[in-house]
Length: 134
Image 1 (cartoon, rainbow, N blue to C red):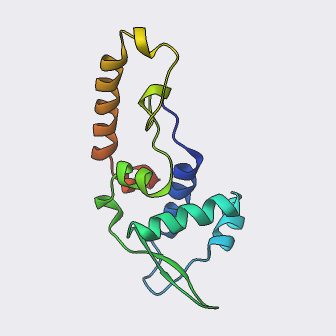
Image 2 (cartoon, rainbow, N blue to C red; image 1 turned 45 degrees about the horizontal axis):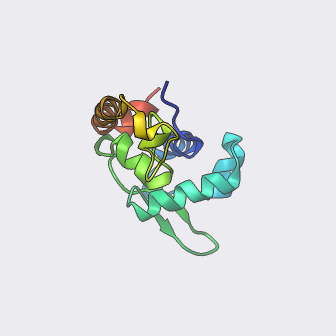
């Protein structure tokens, strides 16, 4: 079974909380983490990644915070995963530069890589909005 990294889960929780706020409302990472009962450090890093990717925008300063910057219907799960955390792979050998002790004799790597591509295509076709709607 594919397991989404915690960073992605937390990012989805944060976006669900922020999605319907007026454009002038800013959200502090610490307050969101506290309200949602999730770790601040991981939440802050996820929000920074979403900011770098343009999914969120940030305002600096004492009254600063984050707001949703894009239509979440147009943000794919794949884009969110790339923005906030390590991309899940079906097997260790498919991770970036992953090695396996059975690599020299593996007869399924190509097939599993094709399956991984199909899963990634699904992630590209699913919008964040689909995942956070009640």
